[in-house]
Length: 260
Image (cartoon, rainbow, N blue to C red; front, side):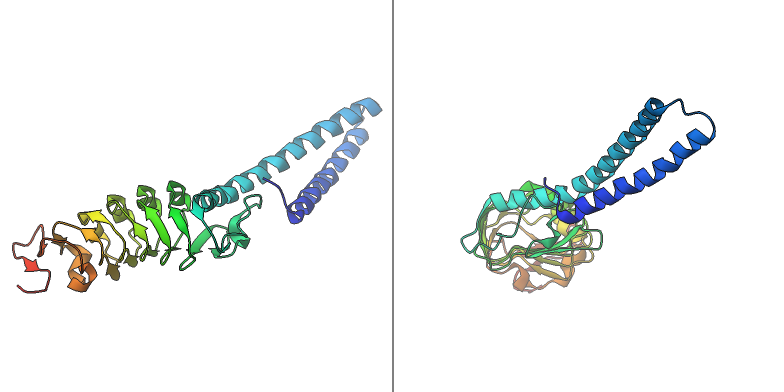
């Protein structure tokens, strides 16, 4: 990864400060009669200089690894997508972090909090590396032509508030791991080709306010436990469900049209 000019200036400033710290040490050696000639002084100075230089590189490398791990994750997504409108053109993996990329928002610690790529005419598949965006709150990929499965690793995004993948061509099942998203308020997966049953784990997300699983190929029963008790049949419309909403704890069943 390449450093930008601001980082280079910061590094030069750090080295200058280290030299300023080392100089009094040399004066102290001479004042105490410890210095044994120019050769000894050069050796001592070189030791401190190299040690400080390595320390600056070590700290800088830690910052680079933190910032670029998220950039690498997003770059993995970019390389897995077709982008005919060049929406992702600014996504330069050589930068220290992705906070200057278009459609990316970061917090004060330069960690990604939003990915806004709705209606961007993207196609391809999602990548498991998205699960590395630890502080992500909004993942907006609706209205594209994205296909394939929803990565199970999205369940690692424990700060996620909104997951909008609707109006795509996603297939496979809804990952049970999405039940780990305890801060999630908006889950919209409608208008895809998702199959399988609705994970019961989703009912444990007590923060969930908006749910739309309509217009898919989901089968089985519709849970009414937990947060799902709040949602109307429209959230599950146009799926080949068996027509009943079933609670694991309550004996009464309600059909998909809302009749007791």
